[in-house]
Image (tube, one colour):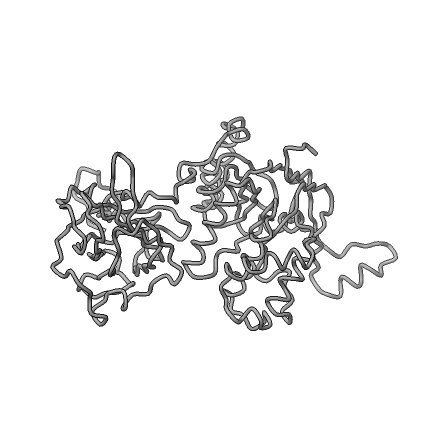
Length: 475
């Protein structure tokens, strides 16, 4: 195998024998004439592709395309019927929930057992144990049998183990579809770190947003057969044709673009390095904002704190030089009630209260809304909005309100906010709260994509026998 490759899959076929009745299996095994009572089902049919070291590669396809099967063959869980798979590097895999875990063992015992299976000594696992426990954050449940765990606890422990053993190759099969929004965001941030450190990642997901953002190359499968490989955006477009059963269009697209699809470079714009970084610090995208000076220069009574009525991230990341401090924060619905639950289509407010501990010439107040993968979806800041923010002295307090209409689709999102500034041409962070709160958008109508363009639709029916110029009836 080429030394630049981490994984090489060559002409891999996996065939399962399907029997109409259980007795047919016995008949076939005892037949003196070797009569066949089964039908062959090709889960994979002569599949070939390579994964270079340090690449992040996605595998997509409809249900039954063989995505999970090929991952199991690569990890050694299954053996191919024919063909070869070569792997250069130690693998850590997140397959279906709980794979490789003994349900009667405690979390600690499963950590040691899986570590041994990966080739680590007990002393090596002892050194990694605290990092695993800190990332999983399941408390005393780590000493309980894993059969008592919820699905969220299971995936926390499994992911914490998989990424803290410092694998050369990480394989992920829909493992991040469970767990709360804060944990999912933390997992995606850790995966980004591993990508930057040169870890080879092979992932299967039905979330095309994740595929486009993270994958430099995508392999498209359909009914166990290789269709194409290439840049994520192009492969997702081809995948949509399969979903829409537009096979003729798919064949035409493959014939026209075969050279570009097999050699196209790079990663889609949404997946550029740093996309989940500090865009919110200077206000990510667009919005509307207003700002008023708050007269309260002292403490806020505890029973009046907005954050006491919010569900906040218990492990929020906060940093800055301390010259400003968030005293309080909250999201308010169209009736002015503090809540994490917002209705799609209604106005809502993001309110921040910041106190200053040093004189500052022109502080900038920001917010950013991200999805659970860390992609910036919307946001703004007082500099973008041209707000009249005046210099502050120690003890001054600003109350900032960003008011806008909720046009995001129903789902869960993450809210970050910060107080920053520019000094001598350099960007300075006074206080930043990263993923401080979750926002749940409730909707009775979700459209396609991230947000709703609020289309106004008119339809007109022309009955048979009338021309388009004559009045029809409204449908």
